[in-house]
Image 1 (spheres, rainbow, N blue to C red):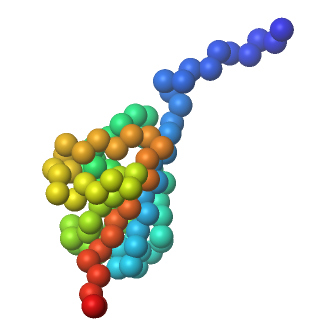
Image 2 (image 1 turned 90 degrees about the vertical axis):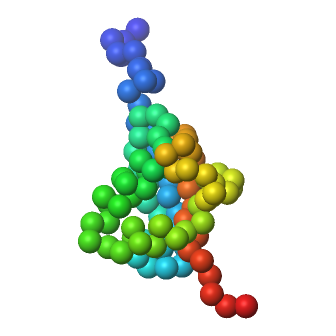
Length: 100
């Protein structure tokens, strides 16, 4: 019977995890970032937030040529402004690989 305030799930911040591979990892200087969101965001918005975490890095140039997976679903052929990324999702950025 305490005076604990009721929890408000609407104000709870959630996270989207971005994972970088190969040259994207090198450009970001890390293999992953966690972005706090209050609800779904577009892939375009997420990318802008990621670039803001790494000012001055060449990450923007690398992300522009990456294949993108949202929760294992390829979305590279879709408009990033139309792809919705939900809290709890994992977004992977895979640069083109050379070799054969």
